[in-house]
Length: 243
Ligand code: GLP
Picture 1: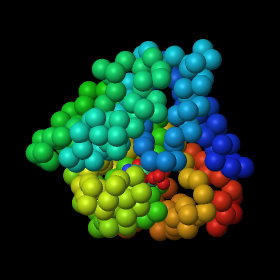
Picture 2 (picture 1 turned 180 degrees about the vertical axis):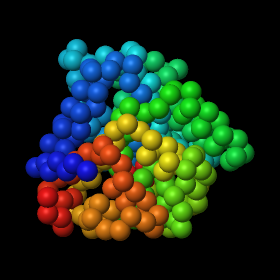
Picture 3 (picture 1 turned 180 degrees about the horizontal axis):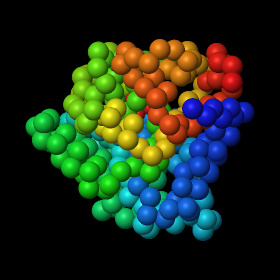
Picture 4 (picture 1 turned 120 degrees about the horizontal axis):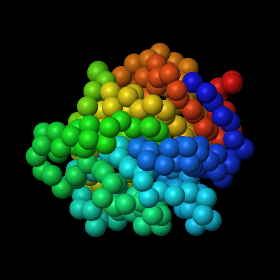
């Protein structure tokens, strides 16, 4: 694992965008694995800026997102489809037909997972997977568990995740309790992984996930076994580790 310590959130976001941008420059038809959450928002803003400056061209890029809430319509402003459109897709020249997320409105969980695994197979492998990390070590929506999921699954969100996500919804009852997520096996199959962590609140999990034992109780810990992982974190997120 390579660790890049940045001054602050802004610096982390610029460096992350530079790495994603370099991937697209080097391989214009890249398959990008994309993430949501508050952490990558500025990274996307920087990619949009680079596109507007004429430095990036997304016309041949395909994207697959990690996850989507079960039961949220694409028009719902808390759906991850809406998020991706709002923060990236509508601002750049990516072909909407080549941007993929699990179908949150598919009620048949087995079908939704099967369909998304079909999409992941069809795009032919992720070149660069962007990740955030949950306070409990989740990646995508792979919550702490007794096993690492291989392919796409429908998960019951952890109580702590529901509570963390409540800030985006009007009330607790409005927060979706289930989600579809790419499995750990699929995430680990990406050629390169870029994981972001920002703020004091992530310091303990950064230490546990990347310097503690590899266990499905801390899903991100599996990344220690991946041959090409870049962890970019700001000083606050890296405050409990020595690199
Ligand atoms: C959500 C997402 C994850 C994300 C995590 C952390 O639950 N499904 O992909 O990494 O939260 O979010 P944040 O970046 O807001 O801390």
